[in-house]
Every structure is written in C-alpha cells, then in structure tokens.
Amino acid sequence: MTGATRVLVLNAGSSSVKYQLIDMVDGTRLAAGLVERIGEHAGRLVHTPHGGDRREAVRPFADHAAALKAVAEELAADGRGLDSPELAAIGHRVVHGGKRFTAPTVVTDEVLTEIRRLVPVAPLHNPANITGIEVARGLRPDLPQVAVFDTAFHTTIPEHAARYAIDTAVADRHRVRRYGFHGTSHQYVSRATARLLGRDPAELNVIVLHLGNGASASAVAGGVCVETSMGLTPLEGLVMGTRSGDVDAGVVFHLHRVGGLSVDEIDDLLNRRSGLLGLAGENDMREILRRVEEQDDPAARLALDAYVHRLRKYLGAYYAVLGRVDAIAFTAGVGENAAPVRAAATAGLTELGIVVDPELNSVRSTEARVISAEYSRVTVAVVPTDEELEIAQQAFTLVHPSH
Ligand code: AMP
Image 1 (cartoon, rainbow, N blue to C red):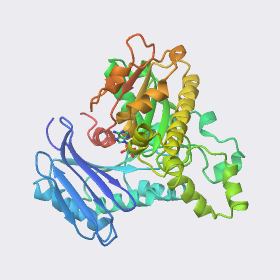
Image 2 (image 1 turned 60 degrees about the vertical axis):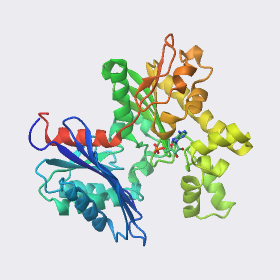
Image 3 (image 1 turned 120 degrees about the vertical axis):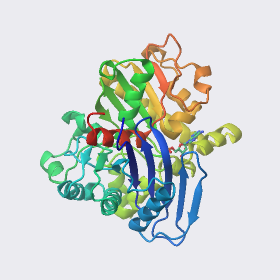
Image 4 (image 1 turned 180 degrees about the vertical axis):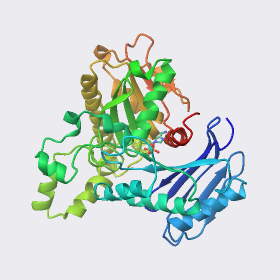
C-alpha cells in the first residue's frame, strides 16, 4: 500500500475528545490520547505516541476547537501533524444517524445539516460530534471527513422489531422508533467472531453482548443485524453501569405524578443514577464483584443478580429471534474481563447447547478466544472490541475503495 495510509479517528464527547492515529497498512496505533474536562478550569490532555513516552498537560482547553488544536500540535511534535500527506481521512464517531445514514458517509454541508436535524433525538451526543467535525474540517478543509454512525449497523433491523407498538402517526412525527447504539462495536465483534471461528460471517448467527459501562445486546444473522437491545435512546435494554435499562414506561408517569419529580429529574435518575449505581451505589463491575466475593454484601449481590438476570432474558429472547445460534460473543469492559459474569450469564443452558468451560473462561487474555467446551453446540467466545479500528477501516475503505 502506498500513498496516504493513515486515518485519524476522533470521538468528540460533550466535554472530551478521544483520538487515535492508525496506520491502515497494518493497524498500528501511531498515537492515541484524549483531552478531557474541555471548558473547565483544569483540563487535561494525555498523548501517547507509538513507541514513545506518554505526555500529559494539565491546563484549560476553552472549547473543542482549542482541544483539537492541542491534539494537532501533539501529533505535529511527533512528526505526524494534520498536514502530513500520509493522512488519508479523519473518521468521526457520530452517535445518531437516524434512518438515513445506513453506512459511513463523507461529510458534506448537506450531510452536516442532516446530522444537525437529528439533534432532537440525540441531544446529549450529536452536538459534540458535530462540533468535532466542524473543527476538524476547519483544520484540514481539503481532507475527507468521514462520519461513522453508531446506529448504522442496526438500520437492517426489520420494521416489526424497530417499531414501538404505539400510534404510527405520532411515532413518525417525532421519529420515535428503535435505532440501537454501539453499532460499530457490534459490527466489528460479529465479524471478528466469524474470523476467530474460521467461518464466513454470511453463514453465522451470532449474539453479541457488549457489556461496558453502557451495555447492549444484538442478534446478528448472517452478518446482518436483526435485533438490538437499545432503542430510541441508549436507555433501553440491559442493566448498565448507571442506566436502568428496561423499565415500564408507567414508572415515568408515576414518578412524575405521584413522586413529583420533573421530567429532567427522571431523565437524570434513569440515565445517570440507576443500573448498578442505583442498586449498589457503585457503577464499576470490579467493585461489585469484590464486594460480593469478599464481603457477601447484599446490595452488591442484588445488583449483580439483576444484571445477570436481564442479560439471560435477552440471551433467551435473541436465541428465539435467531432460531439457530452458532456463537455468543462477550465484549467490552465487563464482557472481556469479568469471568464470573460470563459464567453466571451462561450457567445451566446445556439444553440450549451452551456449555462454558470454567477453565477456559478463567483465562485472562487480551486476545479473542473461545471459552466454551469442545462439545458445546454453540461456541461461546470473548472477543475484544475495537471501535476505533472499525471506524478507521470504514473511513479508509470509503476514501480508498481499491484497498
Ligand atoms: P467500557 O465501557 O467498555 O470501557 O467498560 C468499562 C467497565 O468495564 C467498567 O466500568 C468496569 O465495570 C468494567 N470492567 C473493566 N475491567 C473489569 C474487570 N477486570 N472485571 C470486571 N469488570 C471490569
């Protein structure tokens, strides 16, 4: 491969920017870092060049423009500045692509306008993603900026699964439907699972369990997503670090009418003070597991049991949705590291052809690996996710289709 082979991946959040510079020849991370607490007094930039020492700067970054300028300076200090002819594209993580964006898309003015139109359905995420794109465009107006959408992989979900059973006209007027999130991760992991098994993704049915601080499950049939657990927003589905996942929508009316909470307070409660945090005062699964093991702490036990119970409900549901399951893939912080959660989620499912080998499950590794017994009809695997690499690959393929 010659010419421009590098992609800068940007993930702009409301007060942070994460980035990686990846060489697409072999996937080498030439640099990785983040700027956090943008707009606050004590901002922080951490930058790690490939093969070099980690650099840290604690100073204010007034806005995203200042943060990205600082990132550009760090990259330039390594001799890999944004003006480098080797840079092929900048890939942007964009959370919400609605129904329109079914694939990675080169950003034009019209595309930006459309992403802006989606702000009402993703008020917490899309504005920061848009700012990231605008600032990056300002720094390198000639370079392709590619938007890679968290929702895109889920746009294949059939209408009967994407619709909420509410009045169609009301739903359509307000674009209320199930979009799903973490799509880049589900896509990457479902393909990586096929690779691990030496199979063609087109012939494999996989349940992907993305268990990070946010968590979601998806059912992928022959490489195509047919169901996922998150909905209009990332609130639906599994019990998460701070999100409740599924609740009866009546809970919202009740808390408002009887409890006197405002809509914003309920939003805050369900998105930021629920899940493991709400049940046990702690959103980190490591700490929950420690409290269960060392102290037999009842609140931590309840949180763990509720988390696992919801996960098993989705596993069973997606088994029925797919009809035949070839593989189950655990990924993200909890899925990749928490053997007790994987064991509990799959225990007693021999009748479904799911048998995890305790020894394989307890192996600690950063590699993709099978953890099911040899005779298990369904292969259970741990498959580390790599959203940045997937974004870089999708962006690169779009601007260099020949590679
Ligand atoms: P992510 O959002 O994918 O970065 O996942 C973050 C979450 O993974 C943390 O909040 C922890 O709860 C969980 N996690 C990370 N390492 C471990 C571990 N060794 N055991 C259990 N949970 C872990």
